[in-house]
Image 1 (spheres, rainbow, N blue to C red):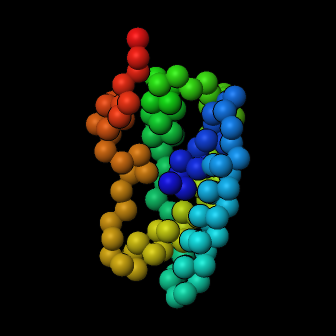
Image 2: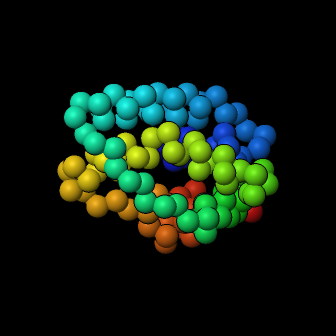
Length: 117
């Protein structure tokens, strides 16, 4: 959810962004609060530009207009950096393997809501 909330305001044009910004702020604060209970900050798995581009491709396929990717990529990385280390630390503490932030790549090719023609 936090990755999606970071992607919307940094990448998508001409769409309302306030809800995503609010979710990002509240979610990041929640992650920080839970992390402060006794978890250690982890090391964030690097995020590949190809994964970012795949997410953008999926958004464009369903009709979203996107900002220039070379501009939005560093903005998305900076937004994600505000919570990712703490989430990685909590996952490592619980011995939960981290997964791709995109989830199952097959799901990207199979939209939940098919586009109407």
